[in-house]
Amino acid sequence: MIDDETPVLIVGGSMVGLASALFLAHQGIRPLLVERHAQISAHPRAQAASPRTMELLDGLGIGDAVRAVETPHARYGDVLQAESLAGAELNRFDGPFRHDTHGVSNTGWTLVGQDRLEPVLRRHAEELGADVRFGTELLDHRQDADGVTARIRRVADGVERTVRARYLIAADGNRSAIRTGLGIGTHGRGTFGRQMIILFRADLERYVDGRKFFLCFVSNPVVHGVLGQLGASGTDRWCLAPSLRPDETHLDYTPERCLDLVRAAVGDPALSASIEDASSWEIAARMADRFTSGPVFLVGDAAHVLPPTGGFGGNMGIQDAHNLAWKLALVLGGTAGPGLLDSYEAERLPVAEFTTEQGVIRYLQRSGLDPETAARHQPEATVLFGHRYRSRAVVGADDDPGTVEDPRQASGRPGTRATHLTVRHEGRETTVAELVNRDFALLTTPSGRAWLDAGEQVCARLGLPIDQHVVDPGPDATLTEPSGTFTERYGIGASGAVLVRPDGFVAWRAPELTEDPVATLAAVFDEVLAR
Image (cartoon, rainbow, N blue to C red; front, side, top):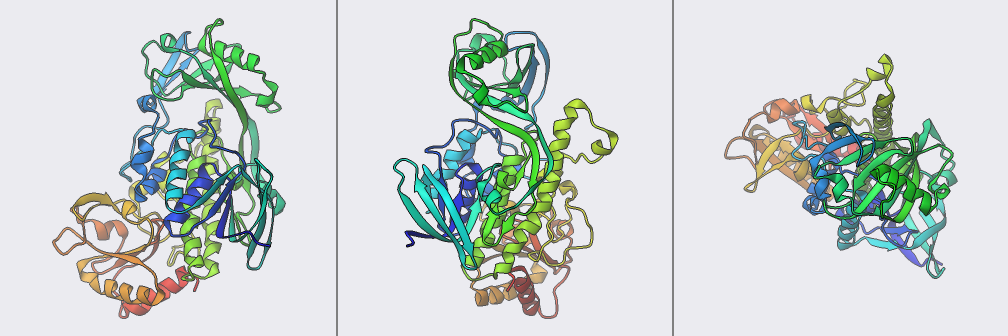
């Protein structure tokens, strides 16, 4: 007997699972999310939302809600190196998350711990209609040609329910039971080490001594790790992340031993502190061999595990969720064929391979890189914004085999993120990235207005919403672009057009107006939507 039916079942309720629920709900799909823990974790884990992540959240109108819970002291950005917090300061340098837009975005990093970000994602997902059930675990699932049947159980009282879903999103972490059960293997460099995080309370203001910093790397004979304050300056809640041996976990450390590490990191053997909690995780580089299996999709750590250096891992998981959500919504709504979903793995797996390598390079830099590895280092802007997709959801991609391009010299080619362009729309300054957040967008010039008539006809037949704009400095524009560089920056001519997907990537472009724009666009949408 089926107790619940849902279009999409999401397993895992941390950052990426909640983002999946949010993006699906934004697309009008009401998913069911189950998470075995009773509440959101108190551990900060991922420390920052990347500029690309913030771009996506701004597009949903919740970016400011995330910035409002940013750790206030973290905005200082500096990183200290010291023997201990009270001991000799060895170095001070710029932190890894400066508010640098690289000239390719209107937003920078937001220094917000996962413990602060996740409640915002959950609240907005539920407001949009997502059914989020914490304290509920997946027991098992079986898939068939039409979807997935899963058994879930409420942890508190053991009540079981059977759920029927068309699709399942596995956001169940790096030890994904779903991935293992599907027989999907992994590859990569493997485990580098383990990290523990200790949450504790102590008044450390006299040891901080008025200094402003994001993190303090401590190194002495007792402890090597990272010390950071949780919350605004003046609060007594802190965390210490000491390095462990590969064979150790937090279970090897009693509260008394954790207290010894905290005292050594602070530099006061008599420090009064209370240990709240401890957990641990592996520092690794590992990739799933496949991201899909029939109606099941792997996202986040279930698909790829990165070292923490660069802050790419959790943010890449959020972008997995964003890439997948609009595709699921169009297939579930009957507008697109199931073949559109094949583009998820085709697009995200190469990007994950590239980004994982960049995380590894940054992790290994501390011990020195050989020239060949160092030569593969790419700048942050490229890692965050330079992805190039090749799939059936992109029409007209060129033969360049590269996975990325430098977004500071963006080409506007199909498969790349829509070139950053600041415009005025309905009296306010915005960007193409913020405008394109749910539907396709067709951009053209005053000379290409026939494209908009064609787009209206084609999308009316498809039942597909579309945003259409004339981009120009002049009075006829719906997007006023003062610089007059739209055609140049998107690589089109005076009557050309650009079709941007709901995830902000270029699906197709035409250099000039064609003889039959209706037939041209109809063929493009049939290809992109796998009709």
